[in-house]
Image (cartoon, rainbow, N blue to C red; front, side):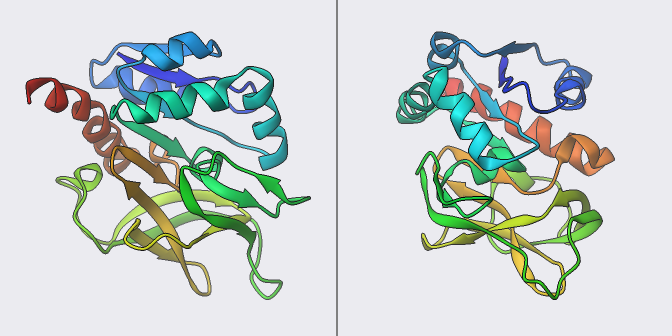
Length: 206
């Protein structure tokens, strides 16, 4: 069962369909108790960082996510969902994030067009179960104006380029994040979602 947190600020139909396509059951929720009990958790997001954090806190989902992560079960943050995993963001105002990974969310420099939108090559720099069976330098779909400056060493597993290198995917133990949208990235994106979903089954077999 894949549990998807619905912050109400993004269309999650595509990512839900991406898991269902591979035969996985999906539960969409805003209930912190369901988050804590989830076997596999996805935090998607589109929109502004401060508003997303406000929704998480008002629904006690920030605490629930931290408790879930301690369990060792897999978590995937997508786009804004990945950014929320980090320490803070400068979007609109300085806002504290979930602080699961050390780093800051910053806006692309003024000399780069924003939003960065479209297909971009993703270069894998470390082995990760998230990219199992996915060729290096495969194209994935991006839509974002902010990116993550990772402070914590060894967390970046892939990068891309938008008039300069930026982090495209991260992994810290059981916590994963993609700046791109796998649910909009056709075959390679669906493969990545399947890889993530299978992590729970692999963990159960250990």
